Length: 244
Ligand SMILES: NC(=O)c1ccc[n+]([C@@H]2O[C@H](COP(=O)([O-])OP(=O)(O)OC[C@H]3O[C@@H](n4cnc5c(N)ncnc54)[C@H](O)[C@@H]3O)[C@@H](O)[C@H]2O)c1
Image 1 (cartoon, helix red, strand yellow):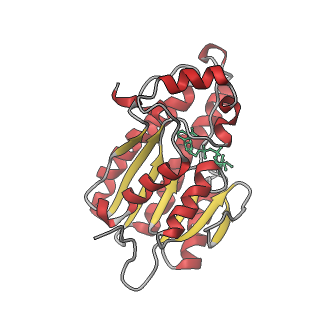
Image 2: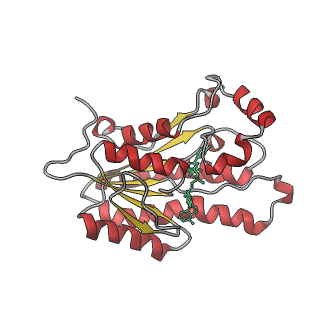
Image 3: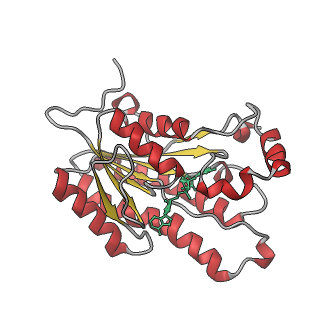
């Protein structure tokens, strides 16, 4: 038995948000390599390698989220996997954090995950489906310096559990992946900061950053039939940070 993703007679359809970002592009390639028809969704509407189709998506709009799901189902016949990967970060001290920046991160990370999941429910309920959310180590343990990021990721981990319970009856599994630092545009500002990186890597028992492919592999496994009895779970892809 391997990583079976084929349903009888048709390729499974995956919708990946934040698809042109650092991790999103690897998600598209990984899922396509394992037989999925991949629809890439991002603000720019670009199509990364592996994706069959791309849609413009702004997670801050419920209408945009519903349209992305509808375009996917109309174009490819179903939605079998939603990867809520898009996200934003805002670093800074909480005492200085402008309220609109705080609210903006909530609107994309948490509210966007809610909007996309709600839209996907309508396509997946009773037909079967899987949702995988991108959380973060920052949602599992308290990391100073970007409170709102960690708070939204902790909320996503809890939303993952609640939706798993609510939607099990309609055959939708909901899981999450929580990586520690991954080289990507989101982390570009700190990757060249030798002092920051030395301190960061010192907190990781396995002593290195996570590759985007390692994140994509965990997402793919959670979505696969090998994980058919796994729901509500968050896999930490973090070299051991969160068990310290
Ligand atoms: N890079 C890391 O170290 C790391 C670690 C843990 C978790 N994550 C999570 O992984 C996911 C992907 O991160 P990444 O490192 O690839 O970041 P990234 O910045 O490279 O990509 C994020 C993507 O989200 C898109 N996006 C932002 N706002 C959007 C909106 N309103 N509507 C639609 N799309 C929007 C961006 O256009 C971008 O392509 C995020 O949820 C992030 O929080 C990243």
